[in-house]
Image 1 (cartoon, rainbow, N blue to C red):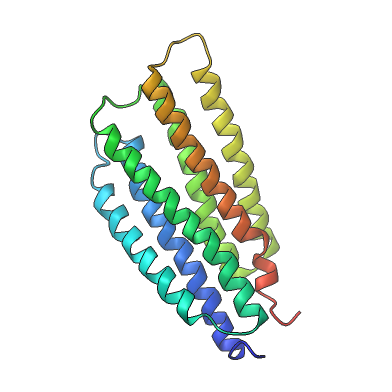
Image 2 (cartoon, one colour; image 1 turned 90 degrees about the vertical axis):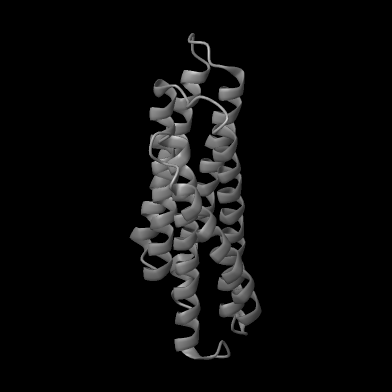
Length: 203
């Protein structure tokens, strides 16, 4: 195989899965601040460290991807999704910093946000597993979490559109943050959807 041998290709898939896991770490750190105002501040340095590592590894991996169709397709496809996840982690970090100037979200809103974030981050973590295993059932699990994220986002919006008035700035922040999580799940699904293909480069 022109991709530097099966061993080199499998190493690329392993590194791609590792990048998704680093993205998950960055997202989890930013999320801690947004969903746990009392104890989540330690998540910021962890998120910043993971994000810096992620951006460095993306650049290094782009320069060293194996040649040949299988290596190029897998590296570029997963790389695009990981770059997008890095951007989403950065946006969530910025939101977390901005929220430090304000009171925490009200508990009735923070609870569904927490559920939405957990579902999205679980989708990202499972996408790394699906990429590593190539098992169709693992990919299907990610797609199920993507659907769960959409349902949880709808529940949050039901509250924002309900009779209880929400501060306009809080409502804006919640919608922006929820859209970030929805996009995280979409990127995770994009990785998982082709994981079985990437596990069979010679097929």
